[in-house]
Length: 211
Image (cartoon, rainbow, N blue to C red):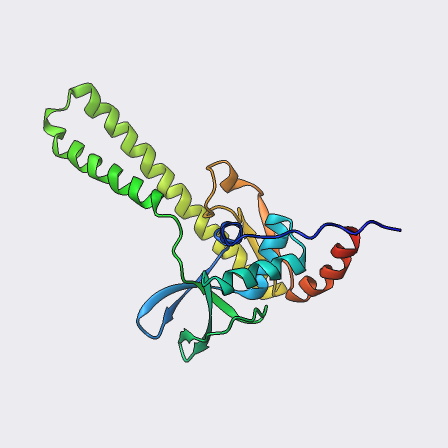
């Protein structure tokens, strides 16, 4: 007789960390505040493909986030979204974060910008060699910015072209703007968003394999 797999228990902290890097779309809440929304089905697929959870475990994680007020349900109204409070998770509903993520990176960037401003203010007294090196660095940074803008445009063009033909989402460098390292941002080279129906179909199959 096949041995039953031990059920896993998830903490709110683990649930939040697992979902923080999900792709979102921009909208307006109550015609006032800009928000980032994601669909329940996308959250389940993200937890299954990126975190290795079963469909039932992914839904449990979403329930934990709802119960602990990390996320809240919203629904479209005209050209914006409004709150639609419910603690029952549904893959067809849309959600937003109530709790903001870690601000450590923002603080670090603020400190770096402060020192950069001070350094620029002292530019006239810099040694000539430093000024020349700064010029090369500026051109390098501009090249990186132009490179990222070009990749972004290519990604959008490819995405729209494939979506119009197949109605499936294809992304070049899907982790390009994810919260990860520089090298990880370019891995994998491309990614498909699976159809929503496949989430429900894979649940019994994956659960059987873990028994």
